[in-house]
Image 1 (cartoon, one colour):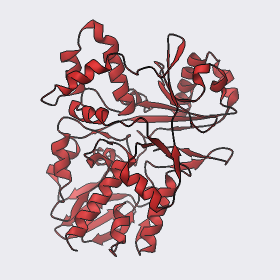
Image 2 (tube, rainbow, N blue to C red):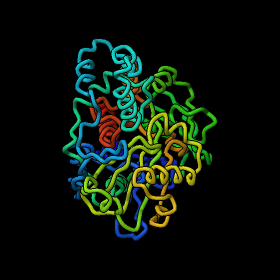
Image 3 (cartoon, helix red, strand yellow):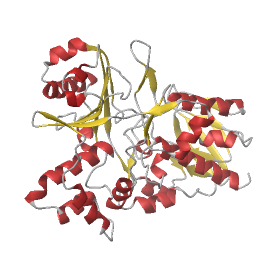
Image 4 (spheres, one colour):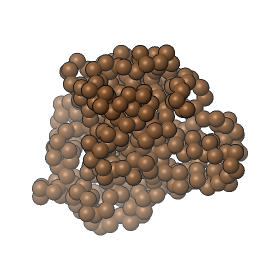
Length: 415
């Protein structure tokens, strides 16, 4: 997005991409029958988000509604459209009264520590872990409050041809504007001084520029130096490095199972039109392609539970997923395997060019973002979903908004 905005103003732009494809945490593939698309990464437009939807309209890329019934499985029963968390209103009221930010863990311990609140505590922690991929011991209550009070559950969308068509549009515009995109270019070292940057890739190629936009995922910026995609700055940017580590970055494992038919639709009347299925199983969250009729079922494991399983093999994670579905639908694992036509486990937490899911705010995140949203000597600029300050944290909207803001900052300098 930053390169797109800069190239439209006739700036000479080079994009260095570590992967052998563009898109990063956006990755669209075809399903096994090649009659539909599957999103291995970002999938939803979570609300009527202006930057994302305006870009899709500009590119003439169609999008449609996503959603249907919320179903909960507990005590061998399926219930539809019940309030997700018992006692939620009480928790929101106490959050609204909070005058100083604190972690979710400390908040729950202070106000909801009694035994009668155990179910509420467990549900909130599970929700924050799953949806925000956040660790309760670091997650900011102020940020969660802003997110929850601005949710728009009635406006969920999917891109008809997949999110990658939007990325392809941006790339085409960059290249038609004279910009270059180099794949398989793992940046390892950044040597810089005011107005002069030299970037060295893993294969020894050197690139020079006046300004550098650093659009790496937060997990890569936080990575230990032994990691494949870790970057070294010369001279060091110590204040920014501390700020980078003051923002949370979660863990996620996404499991996509394509069956010969959407068997769940015939299993229980409550499952007709189901969009999301929540349970207490090891893989707790599942969703369908509703309102589209599809045999694809997507499992989601986020936060500390995903981090705990990050070193498992894909086959082991598939087995856990099938066991979870087996418990829910009272079908044997072998029966489910017989219905399975294709599967894909996407362990973003061990992906060397991501090393996690998406960001969440900690208590010091607001100050950290203020530091990182300022250019270093008007030469180094940071961009990414982790720098977004709105309610749609951790989304494609957040990433696009940050890229747009950085481009505007550079252009406003009149260079």
